[in-house]
Every structure is written in structure tokens, then in C-alpha cells.
Length: 173
Image 1 (cartoon, rainbow, N blue to C red):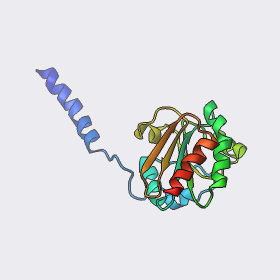
Image 2: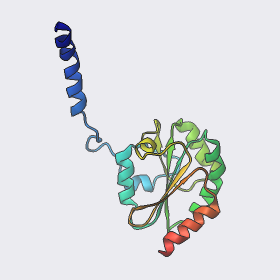
Image 3: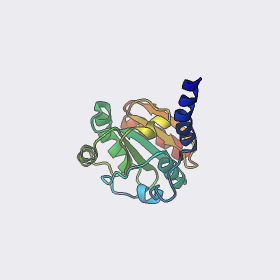
Image 4: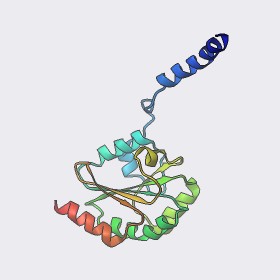
């Protein structure tokens, strides 16, 4: 009986603290989504799921391509030149955003410069955004229509031809 009371005294405060913990960022800690969308490709501002959702909301009005990547990921490296070409070809009509997961910022910045991506990426050092979206691994490319509805998910490297075909369909709709 004393053991149960002792356990309750020790465990109950921890359970209460955990249940009362904030699960959303403190006001003012989420970066401005428009600033993220217009950021330099090598800025790599750190973000969480709330930041990502705010960026999705801000991007409404044009289709959005979101690519989950890492500089150490072989398939991500393979698709990177195609993403750069398509992003440049569809500039002004489609927005692009990367999510750099489980990476070191210096390596990620060097990779972005190397492949010449013209679009920004969120830095997700522990993969929390990817995980909270229910995605496993990388690369993954998400396609959103102009209303912000997820209309496609491509797991694995995507080619320029595949992505252009999807974007042409979105733009024609």
C-alpha cells in the first residue's frame, strides 16, 4: 500500500505536467510564412508542423510542390536536378518548398547551392514535420492544388517528366 502511494506521489505530478504541456508553438515563435516562401534557398529557417501548416495556408492561390529531402539521401540527390529544372520552368505559376530532414544545416546549404534549387526549404532537423505528416523516408513529393488540397503524393525520386505532367494537370484544372 505504501508503495502505491509513493508511486502516485512521484508519477502523478509528471502525468499532470505532461497533460498540460503545450502542443503548439508559443505565440510569436512561428516564422512568418510569407518570409519563408520568399526566403533565399540557403536560408533554411527551422520549422515545425505549425510553421508548415501556416506556409500551406499562405501558399494558397497557386499550386504548391513540397519535396521532403536530405543532403545525405542518394535518391534525393538523384532527383534534385530535375526539381531545379521544373521549379525554374514553372516559376510564377507554381510555388515550391523543400523540407530538409535529419540533416546538418551546413551540408544542406552546400547541397542546395550545388543543385541550384531556386526555392526555399524548411529545416526539420529531427524529421518531426515529415513524421507528423505520416510520411516514412525521403524523398517524398507532395502536390497541393491552388486551394491547398493535397492532390498527390509521390514516394521516391520523381522525374522532371512526372512532375511536369502532374503540374500541367493541376494548372489546367
